[in-house]
Image (cartoon, rainbow, N blue to C red; front, side, top):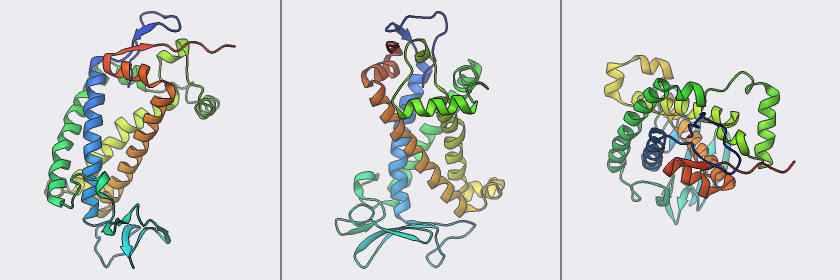
Length: 273
C-alpha cells in the first residue's frame, strides 16, 4: 500500500518517499497474519469439509460445496457439478483429507492446534487493523490515497485501466506516484470489505459471541451461512494475494520491495511516445 507524497513533482527515474512507516508496518504484520490464518483455516475446514447455507449443517444435510474422497478417488463437488481432484484435493498420497499437509497449519491433522494458531493470529489481524483504520482516516490516507475519484470511476476510464493491465502497461513517470483506479478499488475492497467480513463471520461462528450478539446470526443468516461466507471471503483474499504478488513481479520486484521495506520508490521512466 502506498502513500505518495505530493510536495513536489519529481521527474521520471527519481526516488520518492512513497510508503509511510505505518503503511509498511501494517503491510508486513497483515501479510504474516493472513498467511497463518489461511493455512490454519484450511486445517479447520478439514475437520468438516462441507459448506451449507442457513442455521444447520451436518453429515445428513446437502452441502453446496464438498471436498472429499470416495472409492479411492478425490473429488470437489460444487452444487450439481463434481470434479475429480485425486492427488490435489480430497485424496493426496493415499490420505483422505480435503486440503493436503503442504498448505495447512499444523501439517498433521490437529483441529485443536489449528484453532489455537487461528485465534492467536486473529488478534494480530484485528488489533493492528483497527489501528491502521484510525490512522488512515486521521491522516486522510484513506480519503486522499485510497478513495477513487468520480472521474476515475467513469466506465471509459475503468475500461482503459483494465486494458492497460491486460497489456502489462503499468503507470510510469508522474502517474506512477498515485494508485490507479483498479488498485484503489481492490485495496478498499480488501481493507474495508473482505477483512471486516472475515472478522465478523468468524465471530458469528462462536457460540459465546452469538449469545452476546445474536444480531450477528440475523445479519449473516445463520452460523452455517456465516461459515460459507467466511470461506468465500478467504478464497477471495487468497486470489487477491496471488494477483498482488503477480503484479509486484511484473511491475519490477526490486523497486516494489524497496518501496514496501524502506519507503523509497523509483518512478519508472516514461514510455517512448
